[in-house]
Every structure is written in structure tokens, then in C-alpha cells.
Amino acid sequence: MTHGICQLSVIPIRKEPTHQSELVSQLLFGEHFEILQSKESWLRIRLGFDMYEGWIKSEQCIFIDADEYKSLNNEQSCMSYDLVQIMIEEQNMFSVLLGSTLPHFKENTCRLGKNVYRFEGNVKCPEKLQSTRIIVENAYMYQNSPYLWGGRTPFGIDCSGFTQMVFKLSGIRLKRDAWQQAEQGTLIHLIDESLAGDLAFFDNAEGKITHVGIVLDKNKIIHASGKVRVDSLDHHGIFNVDTKTYSHNLRLIKRFVQY
Image 1 (cartoon, rainbow, N blue to C red):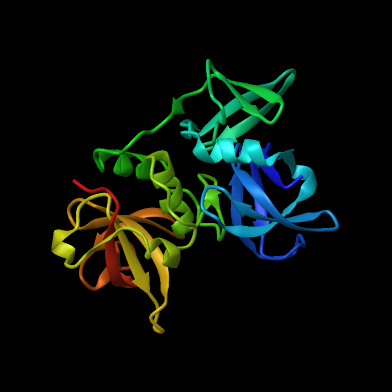
Image 2: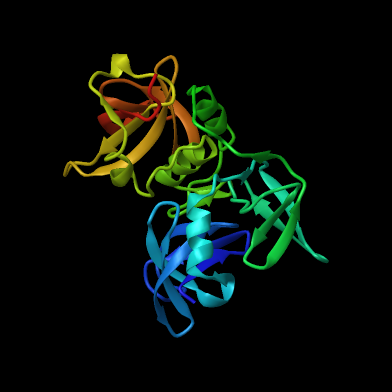
């Protein structure tokens, strides 16, 4: 088969085809992908959601055909809107996490290939976003989640995984890494013109974008640094409210909701 879909709560995506390799991202239940290469029991994949590439174990997914993959790409995404909820497949039960995709969702069921699952938790099928209020509300759902390089769940998440998942819940597709997200959206030239729901990007000494967070009202920002936390934001960057020092240097601000 040339395509697949995640049937587990979460699948690690590795940089190389070995368990010892760096975690670069995660697949959540219901997210689909194209298979680019196979090596022993590993698959190099490209995600349909953000075109991100990496390696997963072949036994952790369900295979689908190209027509099903195309259908999923064109389908409006419905997602789990609970921190943790139970998914039922016949007599089997397992957990799904906030932001998991529910393919072909209808009347409390979703389908992965030929497998049918029952889900009775909170479901969100976001359409075109009209207000940034929901972005801020979704961001606070991840507050205090521990930082995890490559993570995309409330139980471990990195800075760009955080922004990507918050915007996914809000019906907006962001790419995976901070530098990729910085290439999307509309540039805001002055911090005084920024609004809650904008993304602020930060660079290192070499000028490379290495961090991203979501702008809040009253010169605040919510971002994943040690944990998902709220700090102060000004034209210099992020001022850590605990250490009373600047932790990140502001590079630019982008807007993703146009009025």
C-alpha cells in the first residue's frame, strides 16, 4: 500500500528509522499520510495535514489506498475536543487525545479504512474562523502541559507543536516547525498593532527562528518553554515572569485571521 492512517492514540515520528533516533513529531489518532519509503519494519512518511516527513513503525498504522487518502485530504476535519476520551472498536477501548482527527465522522462514529469506531465525547468540526477568541480559548486548554521536543499532545508538546495544535482546533492549518510557520500568514510590522491570536516568532544569535508563541491581550504571550506558560511580551521579546529575565528575542509577528 502507498498510504496509511494512525490507529493508535499517538505514534512517535523519528528522524531516522530507529527507536534511538530523535523524536521530530507525533501522529495523533486519525491523521493520514503518504508512504515514501520502507526499510525493514520502518516507513518514511509524509503527513497529509502539514506535509511533514519522518519515520514510523509499520505495525502501528492501518494501510489505506490512494483514493481514501485523497478523500481524507478533501474532507472537513472533525476532532476530539476533550483532553482525553475513550474510543471504542467492537469490544476494544483505548484513549484518544485532544485534537485527534475523527475521519468520516457521523452519528458518533468514525472510520479508518474498513474499521469503524464509536466516539461519544465532545467533537469539533471547525469551519472558517471569524474570531481569534477561539484561538485564545484553545491555547489555554494546553496550559501547564510539559515541554517535549517533537510533542503534539497535552502530555508533552513543543513550541510549534503547541501553536499547530491550537490552530488545528481552530480550523487553521499550520506547518510543523516554527520557521515554517513564520513563512505563513500576514506580517504585522509593529508590536503595538498585534492582536490576541497572532503568532510571535523569535530568533537566536544567528538569526534563525527557533521559537513561536500565541499573542494574548495586555502584552502577554502563551508559549511552550519548559511548560505551556503565560509570560510578558514587548518589542524586545519574551520576559519570563518567574526569572525576571528576557528568554527569547522577538523577530516578527504574523496574523492568520483576516477581518
